[in-house]
Structures are given as structure tokens and as C-alpha cells.
Length: 219
Image (cartoon, rainbow, N blue to C red; front, side):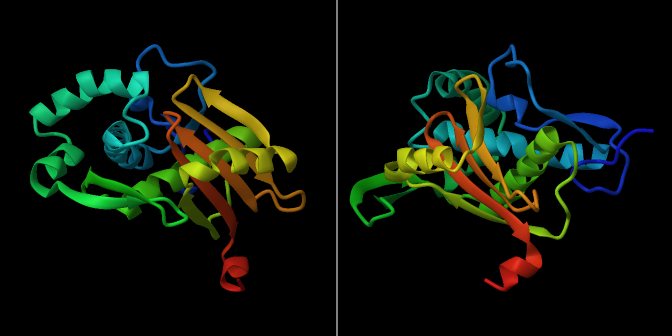
């Protein structure tokens, strides 16, 4: 019998999903590549957000100079924009503005082109990726009643956080070429209490923590 979908935990996982969106890469994909069982509905829902994340990252100030990001920009992203298929591309055309950029410590870095980003949409995809990575590493689903705390990591603290994770005995890093990497920690008693440090294109860093909803409500 097929396992349940890693993402919804309700329907059988009749398809195989690339946990990290394959559209972030230039073929061939690196191996081994984390894949998990997913139902068709969850797989399709995640796929709709994959290209949004790709275009957002490729245009990100800190990712745009990565060689893979540059190649994608010249190819898939530009073609998607020309066909009016890129939601990020449409936002660039209609909602581009200049906004001040500050470090987490409040240091002004200048004014840069910016567009509104659908933060919850990106967070939803990150939560899905963490569920996939959790299953890939432990062979079981992250409980549904666990919540996520997702934060973008300021560039100036990247090395500091990396070293702290190493000091705490983090697993990994799990890397897929130079496009994606992560370190992760699990609580010894409850693996659902976990910390993840993700990076994309060497310039977009995220810290993600998971814990039971009751524990989160208690602060």
C-alpha cells in the first residue's frame, strides 16, 4: 500500500514530489535529490508556487549574481515574462518602486527597486519544503498540529548563525549543488521540535523553527 501524502496526511501519496523545486536548477538535477510521496492535489498546489519562488529569488538583490540565477534569468524567467506567465514579472511591470534598504541593525544601505511580495504564499511553500525535508530525513510526517516560525536571516549574521548551528551539533549541511543547502537540529525527545537553516543561491537565508502549537501559544 502506498504511504500517505507527506503534506496533507490524508490522501495516498500517488505521485513523487521534488521537495526543493526543480525549477530552481539548471538540468541535470544534482543527486541524491530529496523526493517524497505526495497526492496529486498537494503536488499540483506546490508546483503553482514553485515558479513564483524561482522568479522571486532570481531577482533578489543578494541572489541575482549567482551563476545559476543568471542563467535562469536569461532563459526560463525571461521567456516566462515575455509570455506574461510570470507573476513576479507582471508585478515588476506594474508595481515597481524604489524603497530604502536597511540591515537588521538599522543601517541604511540605499534605495533599491522593489515590488510587493506575497509573503504568506512564500511561507506556505517554505512550510511545505520543511515537511518534505523532515520526512526525507526521518521517514515520518511532521505532526499537523505543529507550527512554523519563519524568518529571513540578515546577511551580517549569516556566518554567526552557521557557526552556532555547528556548535549545537547540527545535521548536514545537506546541499544540492550551490543552489540550495540546509542545516537542521531535532530535539532529542520530540523530533517535531526542530530548527532549520536554509539558503538559496548563496544569498537568501532563512531560519525556520517548528514546535507544537500549545508550546507556541505558551510563549
